[in-house]
Length: 117
View 1 (tube, rainbow, N blue to C red):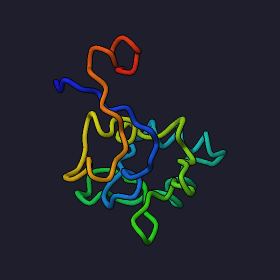
View 2: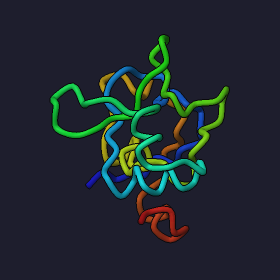
View 3: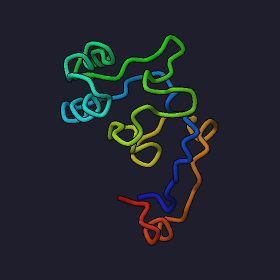
């Protein structure tokens, strides 16, 4: 485990990085419900087969931004996929620290503040 916890400040840099944003079945149902859509309509409109062909991913806009990014806001922030919630502590990409504004907090303090779940 790292000695720091990175607190997201919602800069959206990770939302603009190309690649798969995995969505699991239960997440798809939650997101569709949150958006007021039928599950199949959400799948048809906002997902694609993952690059490894093992499940579904959110689609991207032509500029590689996540389809759920609306300006500087995530349309589904309160129900966003586990992958999104885990960045940058559970996963990240090469060079993420050059584009991400997450603040490093000592792990002990982050734990005391209840930031680590």
